[in-house]
Image: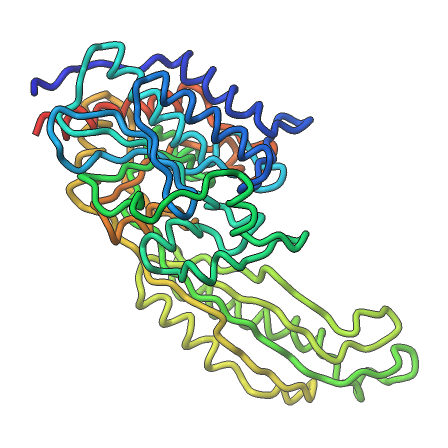
Length: 410
């Protein structure tokens, strides 16, 4: 088919995003729409209604993922668009939902321009990407890609003791395994950056090459409790003071590995956590992320090279790996297509990596996959202050549309 240069309706996209935000909107203009909650159930129904109005067929798989398909001229694998509709507690209006709203706007633009695509266009809503109600994150895409065992995921419970399976059944969105995503021409996921780089560099479009690898350890420092007022400083086995010195050493050594390495001590538990008692144990997590596996290996060398005891404090040290993941590289041809579309539209752009996890990283093992980022104001996400300029949202969807038209023309 002849490739056409058309653009989306930015005002309609904005209205669509605000309508989605009404399902779980918070007092501070954020959104709480936990997976398979009443709010999620309602927004799923609304999404399906929007798709049916466009003449799309609806299918649901056994993990509750929704696939809305616009028929193509040829019976070929679909071009897949989408993301997720669930949010964290008091999250934002753009995380995940932008990818779904983008799919709707692309299809609306095709329909109003009387363009019947050569191959089908499918919008997907993946279930429980956030993992805010049922852990882990990216649960459904993980099952689809064989990374997670379905039987194990169905038993996952929320804080109220409700299992994922029970919540899924209650929504009526427990579909059939035969409807699962198995193949596609390509999967394109538009997402907010959730970081500060694009805004800081005044760039509109990020073409995401990969989701970086990471490793997470739990480190335990054990000392001895005693009275906080009667034990001389030189006779203490203070696990917290020892940990403080250990963390300083770790950060110094990790900081020397590579400028692109990011590392976080996200959880610290101190025992017995009483102000009159010298701490006898500290347990903390250390995670690090980088696209190069050699850099991750260097991190592990640092952790595994920690002393088993801290002589000055007379405390023991133990490090245990909790989990890791490899870097997932996206399809080069699909990345190139996104970059060419951004270039042809005159939008500033750059290649970049994602430090956060996304459904696309699991789907990449099934179909050719790539991601687009648009800027996050002040780099904020997973909070009510999350914001992406409407103009940037519009430009991101225009790149998506232009890329799809290019794929359809080939």
